[in-house]
Image 1 (cartoon, rainbow, N blue to C red):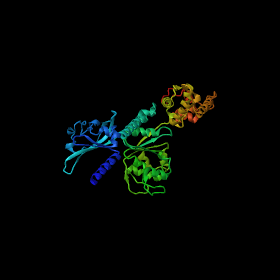
Image 2 (image 1 turned 90 degrees about the horizontal axis):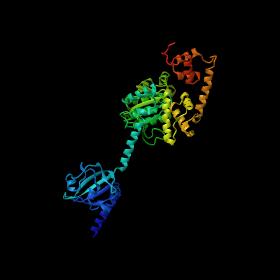
Image 3 (image 1 turned 90 degrees about the vertical axis):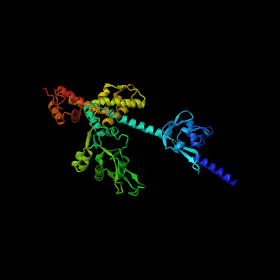
Image 4 (image 1 turned 120 degrees about the vertical axis):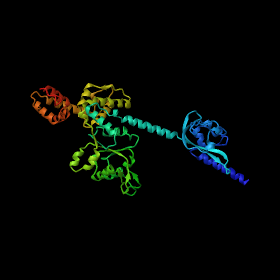
Length: 467
């Protein structure tokens, strides 16, 4: 009697163990009939144990068993001959008719006389993992689209040159130095290089070198070991290690201290890093893309930036022109930002009134593309019609236009006392015929410069003299 009670207790205990498992577990007898069915199987398949018991596993319609669709007859399955199956991804048919991605594995169970007494199968639900995979693939697709060459707006000759260099950089793993004023889109260019390269499915790690103190930046880049400094309570990987196999984008590289410059040079030369507080080198396989708004060559001559590091970083330089030097790109950018704002706000703005467009075209845009995008967003907040008006634009941009208009009037005095033809010619030659630069020096709009070039018979290009 005691032996029977002990046996019943073992069965009950075994059932409790099976029901506590996250994996689905069920067993079959030699005829392929289901003899046990845990709670996870009920959750994964939708079949309660009362419906599954004494059925064959064909009710699950596994898509794969030993490389083929699951047969109805266990004799045709192959499990009795092979005695086990490797874990494989497949799908099963849920009770409600939908497919459920799973990993399944089966093994024959034998008694002490080596006789088959049944089969045990485990089923792992992969639904959440498949969702995560799908999200990751969708994110990669969106990133690829967002940072494709087409996403970088510009039809000017200067931007076409940038596109050409981005394409060339994407096809190599050379270090890239992106130079340009704040707001010109240096990070966008860096992402375009990464997501159009062979590393596109690997990490892209961004670090702003001007945002942290020297000690924090060193720890951020190289990592640290427990106890390396106050607050280092555990080991931490640096951004270089996190980017292993992918790209690191170091923004504002001109702000690095001399000490970190030395450590960065070693990363470029040896492809290895040492965590703060540790002397063991760790290998990293990374591509380094850097950016700065500063003149690194000038910093080198002043002794503020290492010459050897400078040449390591600028293997393939890309210069992004400021927005004021590519006026023909402004309408294209405005249309792009308007489309984004229409989608974000649900408004139906169709365009920009001519007077407002003239103000936008004549503005110097010291904040470059970022400032233009902010101006369009500001205009959308105020706009209540299908066209953006001058009253919708940021006040500082309108006031700058008013000051230029006053300067243009002074420029146009009949006696020519402000600027005459000879003075304008001298400025054009000094500025290599850059009309935007001449306008800045005179404190007038580019429109005024073009107008007086036409009035005084000065050609738009230095090689076009016909006078």
